Image (cartoon, rainbow, N blue to C red; front, side):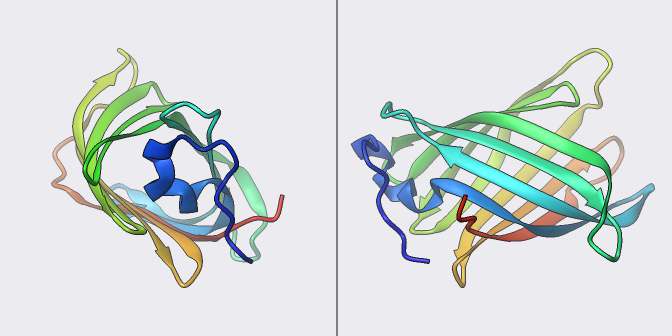
Length: 166
């Protein structure tokens, strides 16, 4: 599918223009204390002409036949370019966690590190996180490493998603 620069995109966001749209695919997850799992993943980046992208991600746990078993994580947020190849990202999760991320982009490769987080009183506390986004063979690649509880920073979820036509 040919990529087209989105109409009305703020000039600051041109380095992230490749992300705008909806991406759908499949991923895998694991973490100490939980069984490895597969999930369907949908991520949407959009804009309204101002100097930020809106972000929405949702997922569903799936079985070996790609049938949905149950809804899983969802998150929403905002992505801002904050200087030469620098990003500031805010993400709120349906589980009661909100995080600030900082990072760098180099073409279609984005690396983020959790700067600080807030957890609602009944939510788990994530101690540390790293995210990677990239365009790999025309698909959005995503990986999230997490440190939670007594566990050190380690792989948690990763997915690949082709761009969706709708």
